[in-house]
Image (cartoon, rainbow over all chains, first blue to last red; front, side, top):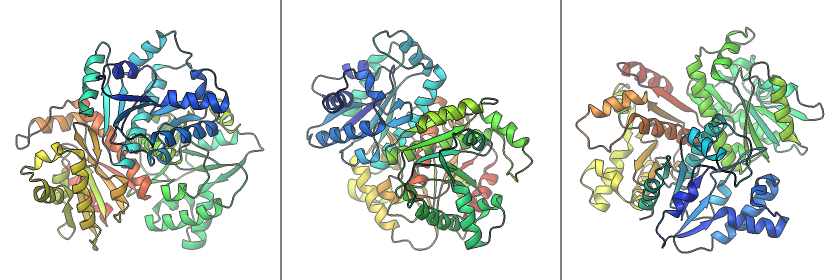
Amino acid sequence: MIIVMGLPGAGKSTVLEGLSADIKQLNYGTMMFEIAKEKFGIGDRDNMRKLPVENQKEVQEAVAEKLSREDEKVVLDTHCSVKTSKGYLPGLPFGLLERLSVEGVVLITANPEEIFARRVGDPSRERDEETAESIREHDLMNKAFLASYAAHRGCPAKIIYNSQGKAEEASAELQAILE
Amino acid sequence: MIIVMGLPGAGKSTVLEGLSADIKQLNYGTMMFEIAKEKFGIGDRDNMRKLPVENQKEVQEAVAEKLSREDEKVVLDTHCSVKTSKGYLPGLPFGLLERLSVEGVVLITANPEEIFARRVGDPSRERDEETAESIREHDLMNKAFLASYAAHRGCPAKIIYNSQGKAEEASAELQAILE
Amino acid sequence: MIIVMGLPGAGKSTVLEGLSADIKQLNYGTMMFEIAKEKFGIGDRDNMRKLPVENQKEVQEAVAEKLSREDEKVVLDTHCSVKTSKGYLPGLPFGLLERLSVEGVVLITANPEEIFARRVGDPSRERDEETAESIREHDLMNKAFLASYAAHRGCPAKIIYNSQGKAEEASAELQAILE
């Protein structure tokens, strides 16, 4: 399993859409949302991050159990860390990582100013107020989390820049890792 | 337990003083000092960092044992990492973290230039010679340590900026996490 | 055991040559290469990083076994992370760290622009194409890995800058840690 992460506005979804069709993709957020809807009646995906930390952890546990039963090679699409009111909640805590068979962790990112501009221009999502500076901090913490995850698993940590207008190049870079 | 950390000059003590009186606060350094005084005859708190690393670890062990017996919700005030002659000694090594019940880790920090100015203006403590640049490095390493601690525990990692003249805002931000 | 790490061009070898002769030094890369040559027929040291990740891990395991039998105090010279096509492969994954008795981790680094200039001027090695910017990213990730390793072991993490023309000072700084 290759785990692909990125913060909102980094363009991770676009990069993943560019992968060849034979690669199985699972979205951790979708798996989380389905379980959160079932367990805690969450009706809107953007409200997930407002769930108390304890409940988010319970949902994580249920998803880990599901993922540990996957046996073909998959790309798991998730967050490196989720920005909550209590801080950056790691997407891959060691307790979860231990239960997955991980061959690589990938962070899709971009220049903080570009991410900021993309977020401002995207009316489809409810977002917290952020500045380029706070995005820069989140990006730095994501890189630190990425190193922790890789050190824990002994797997490589790849950073892919999805620069404006270069999503195809970013997809190709990700595709190369999967081969 | 919420663990609040910060490097000297970040104004952590001031921020903690602004918390409401009903929150129980423990100071890891004080607990360490009491045990170090007892075990190794350390007479001055600023000399703690000059203790050999092995002895610092022994003191850490004794404090962990004490803390694991706490059962009400507390704020633990400590260092993210201590700058010693042998490098940055992590304040929360995994061996210690495993023994504590941690709900969140918080780093109080500020702009390195502001921290530098505060240290220069504080005659009450013996300090090592530092520059804004070396404070910037320590701050970066603290953020990396913070991510490791949070990844290990699966708890959120919060960074609070205590900017000049804004300690009340920083206290309010911390108070919000505790509720 | 003190583990000394640095990325290509940081001048780690020069700094290690400046240590006093009574300090036993082992090179992890050499130990890796000897085993890789034996197991996978690798004939050139710079080709090591082109080995599939799975094989690199197998070689790491064999070296760990050898090192765990060392009983005198040694300096282990290694990479903090190796840049492979699949990302930054951590030099000290937790599974390896757990098997070693580590008293400190040290990162030898330098200004990214200086490292870039040194690499361009060194015709003796086959190197990947890099820019000062990509070296800056590698250096940041190395610092994050360093923090993870230190947090895991509870040992200090030291960063030593080997600035142009100051290798002797860097050696002296490292020597001081070993005493």
